[in-house]
Length: 192
Length: 311
Image 1 (cartoon, rainbow over the protein chains, first blue to last red):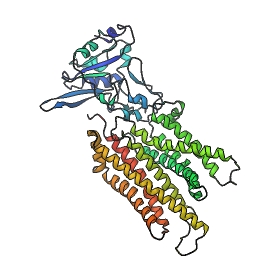
Image 2 (image 1 turned 90 degrees about the vertical axis):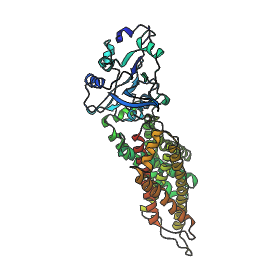
Image 3 (image 1 turned 180 degrees about the horizontal axis):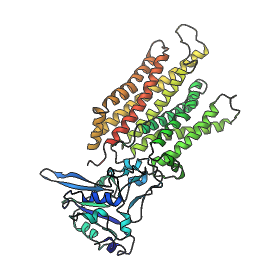
Image 4 (image 1 turned 45 degrees about the horizontal axis):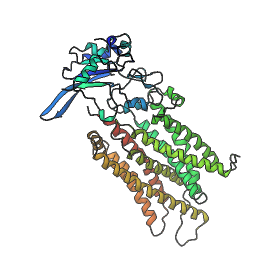
């Protein structure tokens, strides 16, 4: 499946989302490297990282690799706190940053519970995962998704009832990280 | 990771001092402009300036200081920082107007109707209250930072701001020629100046004592609620209670910033003969100001150590 198959099928604007199946993740960090390469990041700046977390309570618990990046929230705290309007929510669901308007106050970094916003050492603005918006425009998948050797990630359009991601979310048990903070994230996790 | 450092602490502190001095000055003027004339003038002369220095600090904390003017090209009503930038701009304007109007009459030949002056004072009171509240709301509205995200944070910082404003006024009164005046000894006949200074003395001590008591209360409530909150709130709290920031918090803020000035004020208020202690006033004011800076440094630091989601 590619992004192009999703686009337009629902007849309305896409609502991009990602599904991360942590039961398949081996923590190889290929997505982290691909992200660095795609976004031409210096080694100290990450848009995508892998956390390890325990779920459940003994004896019914497991420990999972948890790929963590911008959750492209539908109620993004980083957008509402931005004093200049540099952070904004695109109609297709992507939380984006207009670097020209960013003054580097770092309020958005502090407002983000996922800790995924970073200061660009070179530019002085805040940047982060954009769901590889430039690749989506070219009908390609985000770099982390296409790179993953174990197919952990599924990227697609939630507005298309026939997309793979919509079907998976409808049938599998997924969780949203930090759901109680009312951020309404767009990345769904299968913990298993 | 610490994103907001001492520059932001200084900014929050200086905004608090400015707003507090303005509140104290206008309130004292409403209570008795003749008796507390020196308090009114000292507050009015202080108010515009600390916040200017704080703004310089804020601008240099930005990653792109040259683009700071973008703050004033837009109004984002959902962003406390954007609203705050406009409130502070308004505050700067009105505190300068108030400063000029409070100057000795012969200095600037400006005349205003009493009703205009009252309107300016009332607006000034509202806006300085907004500034003093804004510094706390800036932090308390972030759900990602459990140590800040309590309703007590803005209350605590507001009370602290008024105390700092009063301490700055008291400090200026100590340092200006005439200071708290010559000693007034029981039994001697007092001059008019001595009587006025005694009134001011009592006024500052009374208000200071009540505010310090409220600050202590706010601090205790803040700590208790934080201790009964989430895991990440508790881990931030442990840094403040007995960790890296423990000494600073207990000695610098609670002991030096609240208890010592409170004991000093209550001693002066309850002593049988009203003691004349300009040095104690000076020390109390400096300690209260230091405490105000320290509590902001501690809250700012501890809030950034933990996030709502523990990774």
